[in-house]
Length: 146
Image 1 (tube, rainbow, N blue to C red):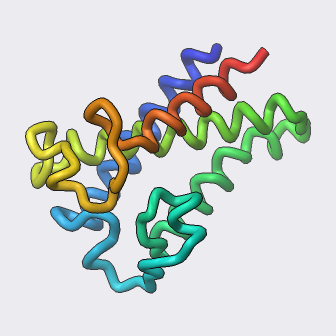
Image 2: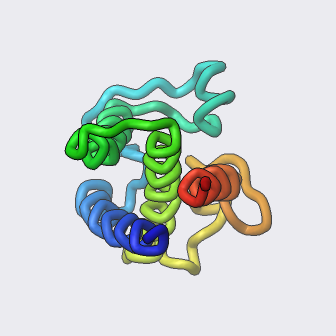
């Protein structure tokens, strides 16, 4: 059941990545979109990897978080375990979506996947954005919580 959930998340991340590629094209992190942006703030450094906060991302993250809660609302049954499963899926979704955005984007691909070409991922570890390690670990832990 948990592996089906992860597969479902991967499929959703694929669709979202393809949509974002159409929206952003070669310009990652909404850099050329007509949206508001906060470039610098101490909270962005602490909780957002130092990336700018854009209106586009605020609403995208909110919509996806809302959608991940729909099964709980549908069955009218909330628990801490279910909430952690939702948060885990949400985190894993964004890691998968980001990886797919680079792989599928004809303007990037694996050959350009690195800190030299991706300004919005400021912290890297073992060849991957640091966020992937943190969010991926938390996501899988929360999904597989007993």
